[in-house]
Length: 109
Length: 114
Image (cartoon, rainbow over all chains, first blue to last red):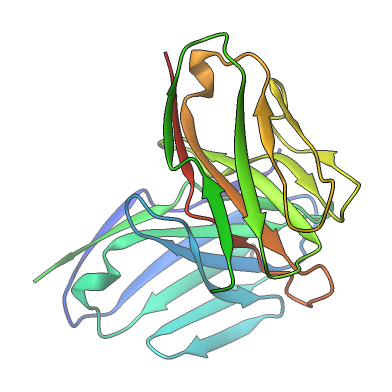
């Protein structure tokens, strides 16, 4: 079966750095996405990785290792507004997105 | 403002009733999707449409139907609602011609079936 694993919840301190991991087992791979979802709102696109390596976008970076079936989202200089759920999704061989259950990130002052 | 709109924002529905959730996008995206999101689970694909006039079944299509008469609209119909269809429903769209084919989401409809 297809599976996306992420930690259920993480806690970090304002101003710090946090890494949210995602491991996947899917039938095929056509890209990996990270989305942010604030409580009661829609998911919003953060990053896309299709090749191995690190993609940096401001305070957020996303890393992919296809051979290990592994990705992480790195958030730097954490702000209170970064408190949200972070969703990992992989596009499979059928070109459909398979979603993880999300990681709830709690930022403490 | 370009984007995706959904209606209604929320709805309480008696079991057995018919309900249509509306979704409209003005980005001229060729592909559209319907997901449901339940606590503790990832987003699950209900139905999708790669282009106007075509639709396909996702992971959890039973009890739902869709149509795609034009590029902009993609309504989701529950023919006879059941309590297990209580969920938050998100519509999304994407440009299949774009390399990443990133999906963009509407604000969601919170549906409660009693």
